[in-house]
Image 1: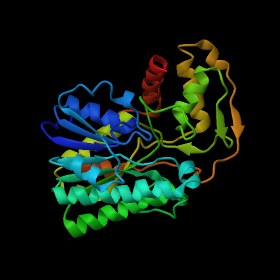
Image 2: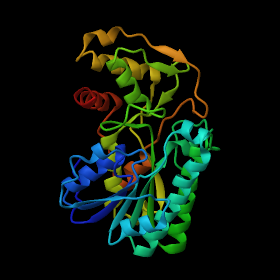
Image 3: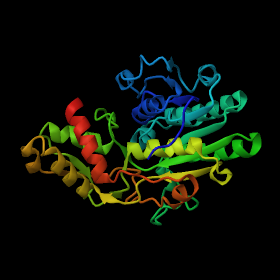
Length: 327
């Protein structure tokens, strides 16, 4: 899907992270100037290797918890794509204070400096964790439950702050509730690695992936290119009904963790046939996890023209190839 967006100056916070670095690349390809703000707590310098020498790319090493860093980064930009956050439900359960400092205080700093600088639109990464204990499927934007983790609380507070700022200070905001994003550059290492890169890494080493629970929990896995499309659509939409609200960003289908592992074994075995024979292990369910997740993407389709092109299978083929070539 071709979306026209060029000759703008765009700040990507968390631009050295998995999603942020992919956004930086796409925005530069379209002919924009990009400022990346990152403190490299979870982002990686190697994620920027393809853009660091681009004359339209500026890297600011700084922290969204420091107002002066935010002020420096936002100077003269047209738009903000706010991706910086401390992700992971387990990390937030272990250390809720740091998650709150980054995800709430840092978010508020970015809203304040964007307001003061007269930024045209502030698009931010929200989260499907906001649905909490709501059992309704599919998830519809205006029907949420109670949060199940400190991380979920922080992401919901972001939405509340954005709503208040849009009404009080007349700054345009759009929140994108990401559902289980995966794809190239997602880190397979570390205690809080996302499930897909972690499983890929384990299978490539010949190790058995450990599924939390019986593997029947289901997720709406969303390939990173769908997320890039949603972010750019959120920047360019001229529909006044489409701003100052939140959208689900997903594919709109759900697959179990058991399905996921079978797909990964199938695609990885094209590179190494022995991977097909690796058996899965099962561990305990993870605290704070919701059993099932499935997004309604009707709102994003109708208001910003979102048309995700990558199903789980199509995205996994792309991701597996990237990991095979890069791990």
